[in-house]
Length: 370
Image (cartoon, rainbow, N blue to C red):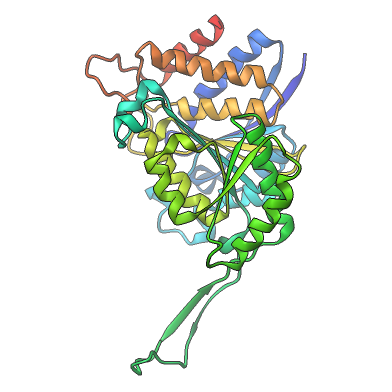
């Protein structure tokens, strides 16, 4: 029997509900697989601010580092909106990413055939579903470059003083680009073996470096086909022909924008998982794409599917349990195919609407039948 240590960060809002459901699913996995999951619950986000005076206590980061993987619910809420940036709940996310060395964000945008009516796209464009993996560089680029705000002594062409002038600089090194590309290519090898590198190489010097490094990395993955696409074209093609994309690899800012667009295509943010990964052997962090949804917290109606599917990614990427991860995904599909829905994804008034615990029970039941 193999034991795995999992740091569980329930967080705020519906976070405690969806993580509790996911741990129940993992216990079912353990019961049928012979593996053991050792959960250690720690605080981060708003609850940590309220109880310990900071969004990311040192103990939380220490336990996360000592674990095999981290399962995160959600952080934040209007209660803490007026705090300074370094004290907001979201600062815990940046601290965890930095503290764990998480440089690759893997975000799945999957439109299950059973939910295709939820997509805003024409039915013919999503008839066979959508399955896109966006691999976003997480710790570099314009979000982490030099920035500043200063008064300019210059004027516009018509003589108007410029006033205050702000700048944000995008910087990428070959090493940063290569490591995220390799994550994307390795992921493509487990999927349909097609990579789209999204950039703005007609304008940006950083993008031209991305292309040079990509050509070099591609040589190590002869089975994978690769194409380059400008980000503006990619944003259009995601809407025009979403099925043509397999793995998209891109920079921090472009990935931030495109992953939200791809998520909207599915029409169901409550179904979207994600993973943040660092160097091999270090713990990854797994979390749903949705936020803390404080308006429905404690009502027992939150959709736990995105967190459950994030756990499936955890089994695959951090724990090496590929078969168990696939079984969780199959169980979720089975539940959907039987017509079971939570309130956020119901389309037909005749479909059974289940609460958080009920839908979790259906997933466990489906898993145990596989």
